Length: 421
Ligand code: NIG
Ligand code: FE
Image (cartoon, rainbow, N blue to C red):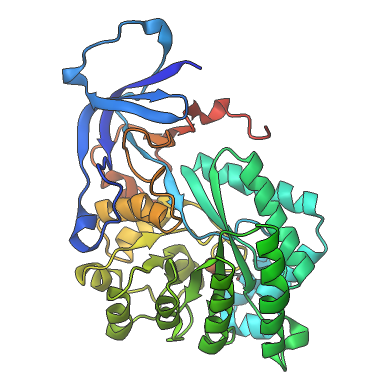
């Protein structure tokens, strides 16, 4: 395979020397090189530097050249929270919301997650894979180079396993790196409404052992919120997951002060996600832990929720990761450039903080920081090349419009990637 030289890079950003998680005021910065070049060998970043110090190339035949035409080059997005494997869609509930129903009211009526679960049951594994791969290809074009995908629309052992097998097949066949989370505790199925603890028992005694045996999940997730799973149930499920080596990445405090943040921290979760309901108490709890607060502003936007206090979190020294939450009910979009705009406009994060939250911090929230999330020699060459922009701020400023011109995945121009091999 030939090496690649990207020349005329207007700005090469989020260079790192240690892949560290960025916390508090560190999120404000990343090294950048104006007027840069970058070399790729196989699927990895070989080297990079300033065009002015350019020593030339001995053998041009060794290289394919990509002209960045003064655009910005940055690492691909690391989307650490998605439900991109699902069947069908739920736009009728979208209309119900326009007409005044809330997310919780729709869920109580048997809609929401249970609605998706019914559609999924009537969808074959192959069809589910095809529907999901379409979305994977869509998010790759939007700059995502690594993604976490959850189960959670099965809600029966066999159906949860079907979802996780589809995720496994996506891992094998998609050009981007995928991590999978088992989210059997996403909603209480109808027949367990009166005795939800019986469903928790099934998650713990039936689903987790089977999934662990087949090595179908990297993490375990629980929707710890009002109307879904309690703190006690969450703790039991996270403990059972840990017994099988599955660390937590959980849904917490999206709909109320659920205690989800505290139980996630107590159980050593890698991340607690959503956090629309966070007070000083929750921030203090997070400060004493290594759990990464992960914010999903598309969901707050789509459901009309209050936005989480990102500024307070960063000012108190916390790290933040941002992700899409791509799912049919609360965020039917995997558009990360839009997430970045929302982070700036609604969460009052600076463009640099938002970029760090979507790259290096997102990679930590999937434990992929050794390979993804920053420009470093030896890291995967998963890169975004934008059109020429006047500054980093121009990217979130021009919301709703993609500035991405080229995508490189594993050292190949994405158009050259065969996504089915
Ligand atoms: O992250 N909060 C729980 N799960 C998803 C929504 C799932 C759905 O509505 O289908 C979320 O918002
Ligand atoms: Fe989610």
